[in-house]
Structures are given as structure tokens and as C-alpha cells.
Amino acid sequence: MNFDFKVQKGLDKKTVELAKKLKSDFTRTFPVFVMHLPYGFTSETLSKRVKYRIYKFNSDSNNSETYNFKNGFGYVSLNSKILRRDYHKAFQYFSHGVAHSFTCFNKFGLEFKTLMEEMNAELVGYRALEFLLENNDEKDVIIERVKKASPSKYTEAYEIGERLEEKKPGFLRKLNSLLYQLERNSPTSILKRIPFLKFLDKEEKIIEKVEKEFLEACKELGIKKEKLEDLERRFGNEKMYLREEIFIPI
Image (cartoon, rainbow, N blue to C red; front, side):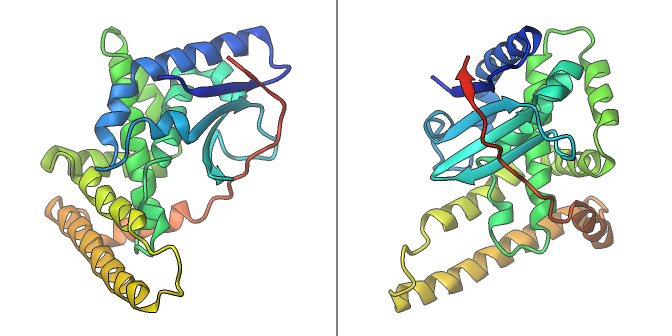
């Protein structure tokens, strides 16, 4: 499977080599991403409708990776600085960004849409990293280092997601799939009043179902709603951007 991988023109040789390694490792760990795709989402979409870019982010940016949708394509972008600084951290961040391309929680009016979005992305990111390091004797040490270096809100979201998955394997994928199917079946025009009104009713019921199941699952684990509300506030609405650069394929 071919992926549209490109790096910013002018990056130094070491960064370009690391970018090539990242592409190779992403290809090798691709089965992990496929395992987490929502039902009905084809793996070919990640090669045909998603583009992968590595470039030097603006100095005033707080992001290490971003996911954007523009002109019918998803763009997973990684800051080249983190790639040079810590490869395994960069791989986890990149995998997190890839997961955003098939995660639907923040597309609807869920109470915890940002938390659930980032939770799923973190879960996929760490599982891809674990797969990458499966034969590495320092696997646990590396993963712990990446966790400690990440903002606490992401680590906390990941740990909740991991607990949910341990108790109910495939839980987040199931909820994500419900929303993906809802997105796929949305009417193309609000001029069709009756279908659109029926869709709104269906959307409300599915959102209610997703929220209810998520909250109940967290409650079973002893995770209070106040904790979830705090994490949702801490995530807020982070500004994403996509820079126009001259890119070369790798």
C-alpha cells in the first residue's frame, strides 16, 4: 500500500532519514491501525484520502502534530523538531495524528467529544508504539518515558481509555463506529426536509446512546463524571493549522 508521505524541502539529511524510517515503521505497524478502524471504514482510505507531512512548525506553535481536513483530504502533520529530538515520542505523536483521521467523536455534539477523541487517538498511538517495540528489551522503559514527556491530560485520557478497553475490548471502536455510520448516512441536502428531520432524530438517539454507554462504563470503573468534565475542560479547543510548504516525496 502506497502512502502520500512528503517532507518539507530543505530539511537536513538526518531529519529526512528519520522521516523515511517513520514511514517504514508506519507501514510495518499498519495492522494496528486497521484493527481500530470504525466498521465500514476501509484501510485504503488511509492511503488514498490521507496525506502525511513532516515539516518545521512555527516557533509559536504549541503543537507537535496536527490533523486537518482540507479540499477533500485529511492531513496528518508532524513537527520535524520532535522527530529529531525523540524518535519514539515522535512516532507515538504521529500515530495519534493518524488515529484522528478515522475518529469521529469530535464531529458531533457529545458532552465529552474532545476527551473521547483524544482518548481514542492516544490509545491507538500507544498500541502502535507497543507493536513497534514488541521485540525491544527496553520497550517498557521507552513507553514510560514517552508518557512522562507527554502533557498529563493526554496520559490521563489514555489511562482511562486503556482501563475501558481492558474491561470491554473494542469498546471505543464500537462507539466510534456508531458515529462513523451516522456521518456516512447523513443527508446530502437539508432541502429534503423529511429525510433530514428523520436524520436529526436518529442523530440525537445515537449521540444519547454513545454518551450513556461511555458514562456507564466509566462509572463501573469508579471514574467520576467530575473527572471527565475536568479533562474535557483541560483539552478545550486547541487551534490547529496547516502550513503551505514546498514538499518532496520520500
